[in-house]
Length: 346
Image (cartoon, rainbow, N blue to C red; front, side, top):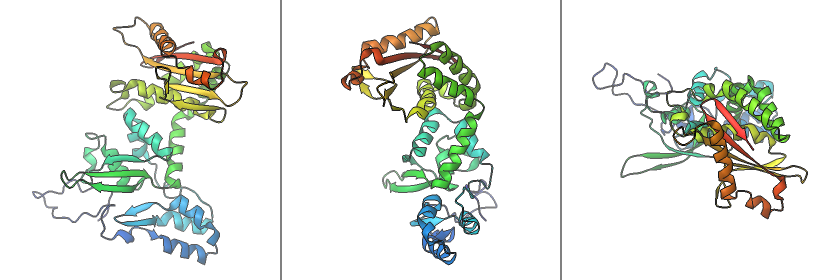
């Protein structure tokens, strides 16, 4: 009997009990769930593809069972041997609808963690392998347990606290195939608003605040409900981080033209986003994000003014000036958010 999560009816009071459950971290049958590296390289040699070993390892290696590492999924390897083309064979065998839903409707922390993973980072979490499917809604952190059990994440390090019995896992995306699957999935979220996103970038480069507002509100109306409509929306937890991450995602495509940094110290505080130009002909940009507090601010305009005032008082531009960029070439934008409404002032 096989599956991803535990059998939900397993209990001493049911007809289904006393099962030996073998998970991805179990040592039992560890080398039986896929091809070992020796088997894969031998198959490549037999097909005259010895020169493809490095690429195949990057794309399809990474699965870990117990202490057995360098396990490859058979479906992708078999298809690669037939076609000779690296592609996301295993990741495309299903719609990945549940994965899409869990990330898209998850909290800000889930989205930020996914961003870190896609950037090659590691995630440290306590994993509960006893979780069953029905508990996914009750425990949002269970998403990482599901992703580990289903092969989207791999164990980099593992530590057991013998006093508490809690297991701390260091996790990463399994391989290139999984990374490409996630990137395609996220691109689909933005596909309906691609023109508005590009329009915002053009307006930003031209210092056209009016158009920036128009495009940003269009994007917000289309996208915020899509990303933030879960049972625990980030608007109830850390909304500023959600908006911060959203705008940062829009400008990241300018990384070839600007050095983009976030949440770094400068002057007397920490700016939200700074864009330092790589060419002397471009202006530098500093952005500050604020959520409207109805008790302190009468309107979004007051909130945007507060963001601009904070940048002046904290002197965020100091680090840019130290690098030789004159004040007249430093643009500052205050972003005010309230739900799906956005106001930008400079």
